[in-house]
Image (tube, rainbow, N blue to C red):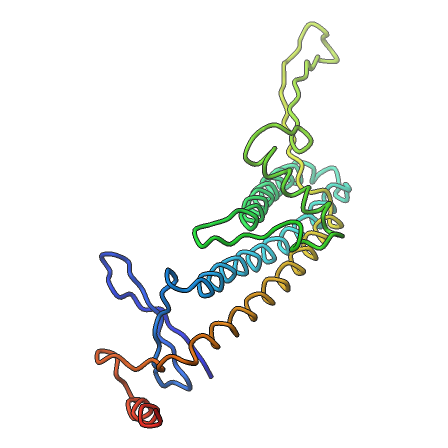
Length: 244
């Protein structure tokens, strides 16, 4: 069984590495220089993208459950004596949904923005056409609402003049805000389906790149254990070296 463990090499600089174990035995490993291998750079880039999609799926699933609860509360299933409690919970739920909505929009948009490894997804080619409308809605929310305030379809702010019904001369000016998240569980379900399709596509790319990397390195010497990391499998290294 293959396992891995992160190890800090230099606490001052934060440099780190990973040790790999096969059935508890430390494996020889050599880090591939991403600056010298275009395939390895792509492999790493799509790995980061896959990690982001998995995170988005986790958040979107939680979001869907929260929206379902919110919709039940909005249907007014409580008694009049519980109204104040519901109002407080309703506001807290709305804030939670807005936070999750914002996080999903930011990270989803990052998938389609090139990063340091030169990797990004493209709407044409990576997104299934049947999810174009969902993709466009998320990207529009990210650009016009989350990052800026150019779209009022997600947020409303109104000012009211409220008069005392017993005394028309008494009035109060009140302002109310309303932030609307993605509308209902049906939309969230399509977002999740879109993410699942994207993850499947990205994992296909990762598998293909891994095969190319393994082919590239078949002609190179197998990594040997450095003197500082020699462990129980030293004999195994010698056996492999002898074969060469």
